Length: 316
Image (tube, rainbow, N blue to C red; front, top):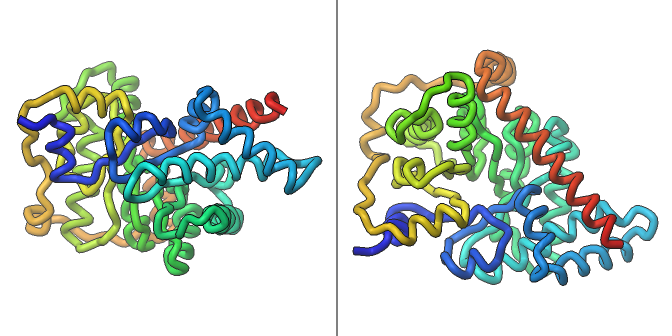
């Protein structure tokens, strides 16, 4: 029997959640995603020293006295270009988390990322701009999508975020399964199976809503804590999976059952809602988990962004 990883590849698009090229070579995913945390880890690996050195040199050529900002941009693109050498699909590159509440600045950064990829010979069709799913981030993504720049809305924890992204015509969302589970375990002290895992149930709700009302936005489950969560969403549009879980799946041979059914979702008695700004902000306010995890995620990504800056500065 084929491994569970190979079975998953038959029913969903498997994406590697890593900046480590060696893991990409080993598991052969369709796409790859990165974020400041993953880049921070990868940049410190000796095998990627040449990508760091190039970013520093290029940054100093752009602005001798303020070279860190362009160097950070270049480093993200260097890893993205390297990842694209080993995957047939796309790479997601993240806008700085500190811009999460600034639509204009997010637009400027996204366009800069696309321009840097273009200068490296990479067409924008192979890049997704990764943006935090704040109201301001979703507004930026709506504009970018009309300009042919497709987006991956990340740090998505609540249903309001998912509905707003669909209405904005966003290409892809990344609901964070494991972080939702973390919050509920911390609050309740309970253990959860894959069947009642709050993160799994959240993604299932979003998937069914999208399929019921014909939204084209791709649902990509992310931030998994165990293989059971992955398998519980086996027929999701896409799944972005860490190297550790990819390895476990590659070693398991049990049958992967069908868990999500797009056709069956169309028959469900689900009410369609509209998500304007006031309703979005109110529903986020009422969703303590989504608000807590979104804020925490933005803080963590920004902290890792600053750590990466410090790492580059220390190499100079």
